[in-house]
Length: 264
Image (cartoon, rainbow, N blue to C red):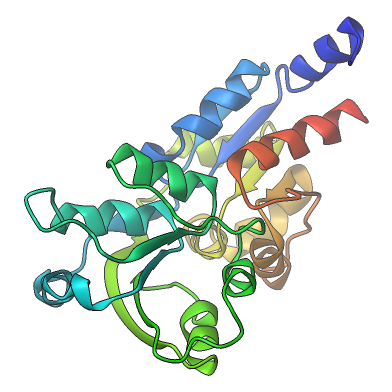
């Protein structure tokens, strides 16, 4: 059991640190609350927006055929939310089993009265594939996805013999221009850490801030990443990854920040 001094140091390790979150405001609350509980000052710069598809016609067609599927695989909370905007409880019960890529996605299902039958121990597309059998001949799978989702899961499942239908249920688009105070804080070096939770948050951060500003300011803040895929994009955009979560979850990201600053 950790002693009181260690516990107190951990809980105060982010005190007065200024941390910039780049995910959408409506999805940042859990992460923001956890950081503020540990004393951090949090700024939010939503570099992406999550919106629905231009039309729901294709999604509705798949929902009418849900009884044909053995599995529905959700690889994000957004996929759950937008899928469930069209599927409602006055429809027939879901026959397929449900796979959630990680605990946050599983909780999104639970919040809508659904239960994940499978949550892989590794919360990545590769982890999803590892959780399924090597042969899936005759298995029919529905994959509700975003417009920027990787092809790792559907292509990997097809290679094992599964029939996979993909349908875009949400889109990730550019966020609004940052508030002037955010840019002033980045320029002044008063932001301690910029946190990225997906590759799209990285790409749009660079676009919204401007490549020339990134080059001038990148040594004035640390960079925290939610996982290897995001870290790869960060490095491709000329930034250094100082902190990387050991698992692709918000709680692991917060713990990685706490650990980093406890050691300083």
